[in-house]
Length: 243
Image 1 (spheres, one colour):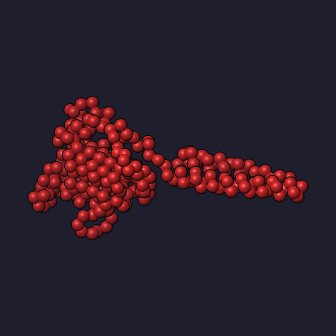
Image 2: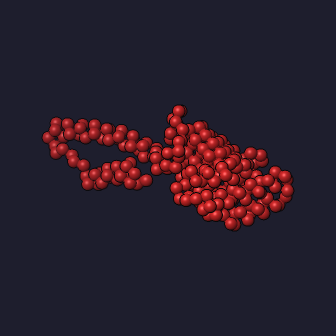
Image 3: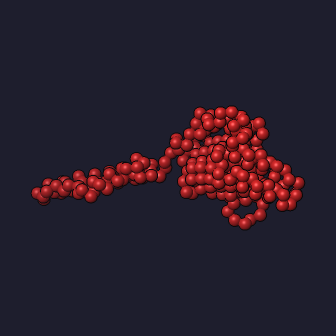
């Protein structure tokens, strides 16, 4: 109980007091109700854990299956629409934002939901699916869909998600843990590299065309208005205007 309170107070600048957290944070209420439901679930009591789960979903907007294993010191921010499956495991220090799903990919028995190691940050609307392991200090970008294991100290984004940052000796510290604006844009980077290569080839073609025009005493060709507009569109996309 107190670990969760301290985690929220540490990471949420909107939390003015412990009393406000206790009274006004649905993510915390959902965790507390889940702890009760999980206790009865481990005892093998039928129906009651799911009824508590249903009550919790009605009151908080979070759906945490009674079988899920949640460590102390977890922060579910806002929480509306969060779904956590039966065999999911969440370790200490994890931050989960609204709309996140820790779900399965089929009807297989046994472990079929993700395991989040310590200090994982899962951005809004992200989906982590299947019996996979998300390593320590991983950041998952908002809206990403993660379908494979992720090693420690990585950042993943995309549909499906892939690793865009993997510093072997860098971890997420207190100062940048919530900084989702620092996530890289690998799609734009790839387009920028391809655009640079195409520009080089086009420049060579232009130079050859000029030489040929001079040899044949013809007018040197100039780029059309449409070509200039297309180049502007490409540059806007690469620089983020179209993403």
